[in-house]
Length: 159
Image 1 (cartoon, rainbow, N blue to C red):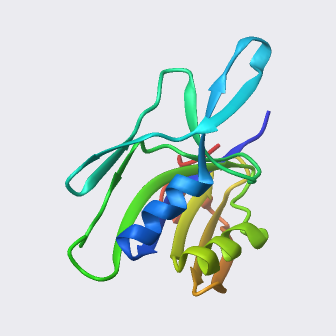
Image 2: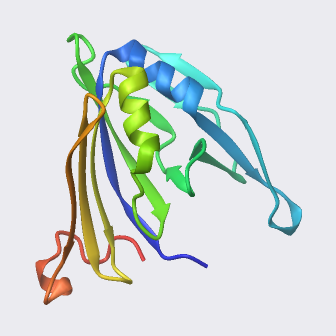
Image 3: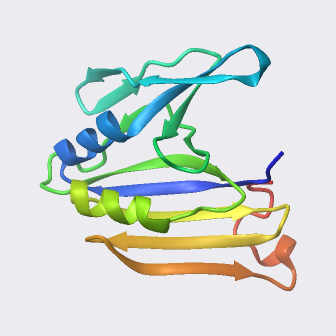
């Protein structure tokens, strides 16, 4: 069973590009008997500046082709949605650590999106800061502390 690296992902881009990303790259995983999982399309309900992902009790929002990257939020709420570039802020978690490999870089290029991530893993006692802009990794820092409990932003996050 993995430790979980938990935190927040901010996505910046045009509203339609963000929606296209979610409609194409987010799946719903349904947990079945014997821990089996089945992926299906995410269904969104729209109301003004909010999009709610229809999800049941035994389901999770999953980033397709990732190594256990989950979105904890079930609503996509746009900030500054009236501007050309807006953003959303989502609670996320991934097994072990946030893995940017080529997946997020590719999504940044494909959908014209920027990603800014902060995550923490209290079991292994590290924090990650990741920024991807225009398909380029601007920041990819893993920070370990001498006194994680005192120095970390949220030492109880993740685990």
